[in-house]
Every structure is written in C-alpha cells, then in structure tokens.
Amino acid sequence: MFLETTPALVIATLPKIALGVDGISVEVLQEGSGPTPQRTQTAKVDYTLWVNGFQKKQIDSSKGLLKGPFKFVVGVGQVIPGWDRTVAEMRVGEKRRVVIDPSLGYGEKGMGPIPGNSPLYFEIELLELAEMKPLNAEQMQWLEEHPVP
Image (cartoon, rainbow, N blue to C red; front, side, top):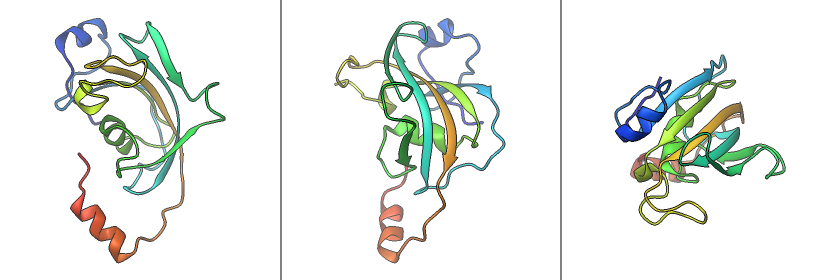
C-alpha cells in the first residue's frame, strides 16, 4: 500500500488514515482484486472531493455532477500529482479515502472553490482500466523525459 504524510492536524482528525511519507495519507475502505494501472493506461474512477475534512463541504463528485465516472490517463499529468500517485497504487475494485497535501494538489494558489494551501480529501474507487495501447518511440521518449512527480 502506498502511504505518504500530511500535516499532524489532519492526521489527528482522521485516526483511521495511516500516516505516510510523501504527502498522501490513505485509508483503504474496500480492497480491490483486479490489476493496478500501468502508466499511460486509461483509468475510470468514481470520486468525491471535500475540503476541510471528510464531513465538511463537498466540492466535487463524479456521482451526480458528471455524466458518469471520470476517465483519465494515469501518470502523464492529466490530473494533480496526488491523484496520479494514489491511483497508480490501487487495484481495480479498490475504494479508498486519501488526504492529499497541497503540494500534490492545487498548491498555494488553489483552484475555484478550493482555497490555496488546502489539503484535499478524496474518496476514490477504481472501477476499471482500459486495454493498454502500444506506445511508439516518440511516446516512450516523452515518458522517459517526464517521470511521474
């Protein structure tokens, strides 16, 4: 399981979430039994986002706000670094709560209704992975030049 750190105040309010080492804290709600995503593989997830704690203000959700689950390509910077890191460690079918440090989220500036320097509270479920497509030499070179942050 991939674990990272968050501020002590956050951890104190979330006793079931294990403390990690690089900006992400994780609580697995449901174990998955499927594969883990490969870099450049398209993942389909359901998620909910809160700021200021899991019982506070809900900011966004794929359930009801989007026309279905959210899809993104893992490990290429389509989403915040905290998402790329945590989803890359999940198995299909897994559901987890994560607290992502601002440095792996929207940083000092924030975004929309998310204030700057806000830890992000997500519940994420990895629903499925698309079939891997072969990469050409140019794509492989780009991946080598752009490691996952």
